[in-house]
Structures are given as C-alpha cells and as structure tokens.
Length: 397
Ligand code: AMP
Image (cartoon, rainbow, N blue to C red; front, side, top):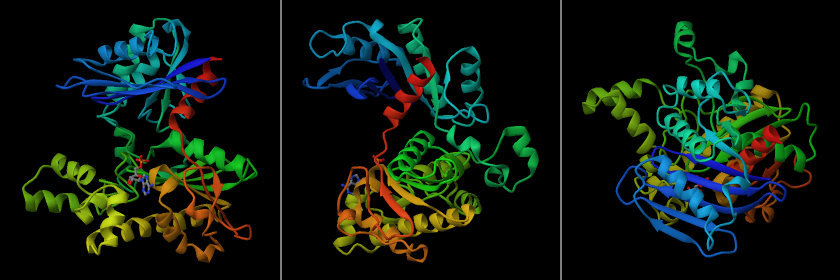
C-alpha cells in the first residue's frame, strides 16, 4: 500500500511517499516559500536524480498539485497515477483534549482542528489547509490526522494541570499537552521491543534532542509526563527556545525593552535557547566547535542544555519511582556522542554505566550502556514520517 505523508507548515510543505509493505521511502520532498516570492519544490525520488522546480506557489493547493505532478511524472515520478495512493497521513500539531489517537478525517475532525487554532495558531491552520488541498486533489482518498499532542493525552491531571486558577483550564483548556508525541510514541515503542522490556509496566524515558527538544516519561508505553506544555516553548533548553523560565521574565523584558507580550514570546521562541545564551548558533556542531575554541558562552550554553536534560531525567525517575530504559533520539540525541556522554555523567546515582566505545557510534538502534548497567541506555533514531505512515495504514487497511 502506498501512503503519502504530509507535514504542512505555514509556508512550507514536506512530504514522503512510503510503500508500507516494505516501509521503503519511494520519494520525499519539500515545497518552500508557499505564498511568498521565490517558491520552489525539491523532489527527491529513490534511485533517480533530484528534481527542483522553481515556480510560483501562491497557495498550499498549488503546492499539493505540484507534489502530485512530481510523483506521477514520467521521468522523476515514482507512481504512474495518483489513484495508487491509498491514503494520506497528515501531521497535525494540536488535537486539544479531543484526540488521544490518530483519526480518519471527516467534518467533525476538521472542526476540532479548527477549534484548536488558538492552541496552535501557526501550525493548525496550515495543517487544515494541507488536508483540504489533498481532499480537493484526491477526492475519495482517505485522509488521516496524526496529532502531535495525542501521546500526551494519557497524562493524569497531577501532571498536566498548571497551578493557576482552575477557571482558565475550564474556559480555555490551558494545560500541559506535550508535543513531538509521534516521535515519543514511536521511539518508546521501539525501545520496548529492542530492549525486550515488559510492555505492560516498563518505565521508559525518551530524550528527543534536536533543534526542538523534549523529554517524556512513559509506563507500559503510555505517557505519564512530558516536558513541552501548552505550547512547545516549555521544558528543555532548545536551539532557539528558552524552555522553562520564570513567567515574570516576560513582564520584566516587556517593561524594560518597551515590547509587547507577543514580541517577548517571539524572542523566547526564536532568539533564545542555546543560540540566545551563546550568541553563536543554534546548531550543536557550531557550538561544540566554538566551545573547543575557547568561547565561554558557547560552553555555558552546552553545559546548561546538558544540565537541564539531566534534571528532567531525575525528576521523571522520581515521578515513575524508577526507570528501566533511557533512550536518546533526534539530531543531537542520535549523533552527538559528547552531549550524550555528559548527560549520562549526571546519572551515575542510577547505576548507569556507559560503554564509551558504543557511545562513539551514531545514528542506529543500539545500547550505549554496558551489560551490567542498572538502567539500559539506548539510541533509537526517530522516524516521524514512518510513524505517521504506520498509524495511517492501521486506520485504513
Ligand atoms: P533535528 O532538529 O532533530 O534535525 O536536530 C538538529 C540538531 O542536531 C542540530 O543542533 C545539529 O547540530 C545536531 N546534529 C546533527 N548531526 C550532528 C552531529 N553529527 N553531531 C552533533 N550534532 C549534530
């Protein structure tokens, strides 16, 4: 079965065509600068040269049409007719409190995605436009919504409630939701299989460390806590997001810099994190190089990032009263051996022992702990597109 996976952003649209029988990626690509000058499609079919088309893309509808044209093109296409696409899986940011699982899109689902616009103002409108563009282009083909917030829906009130007046939860559904849920579910599931853990009550912590970073605690594959909150701003220090800060910082910067709340939040989302501390880069490779050259702020940024991850791991071990496995994923978690090693240096009290040779490897499913480590520590590469294709297949097969 062929499943098209779509991740629509406000001015971009990423896609992958996946053959679910073999889980092979037949083609992937990206539409950039939708609705802006200089829009372009980059289409990368398997075993064929990359194809780039620079053409006006005023709307997501045009972008979807260009993607489908590229997929069926005689030279760089990978299917002969769009009828071969059995279903489309869409990454949708926010499903609010309505969805704890993926769903086939109908009018009710679209209404929920719309009702959640205030909770995901940048992504949900784009996600809905992507769904509607695919419905128009492929009438009758099932569309599936896979929510980034779904995994976090199993948290209990003690984990998701903010200690603010209850009326704000009742009126506006203000609570912790958690994001990167598709990745956390996929990676915790793979961890359970790879490490042969008891699937009903194993305690797993997944550290998704990339430009966006989050951490989850799950028992028996069900999320009990996660670090991102009402929005992806909360939790770990990220590439450009601050993660946890005292909320009074917002007022302090607004008053002293004569900025609006929106402007301060933009700073906390886009100019903070390791970029904000270091002033060098949001990219860990640049930061490590700068720190090695003696840049003090780059070193502080790295140390603060590592310290925050270690603190969250400690708090989740306490929340679950133990842990069986800790897994690293995401661009940093899969590749940055030094950062992984330094996080684990904080975890000796758990009886964790890291195998230095294994920890030098990257990008594949593996243990990095020694066989006698009390807690298993693993690397599991995440694959959100494959996870979306699998969820889609489950619903339509
Ligand atoms: P992601 O958002 O998951 O794509 O992750 C992006 C982050 O992963 C960036 O900070 C990169 O510097 C980091 N990263 C990717 N590859 C490596 C690598 N080989 N060594 C260190 N960091 C890496």
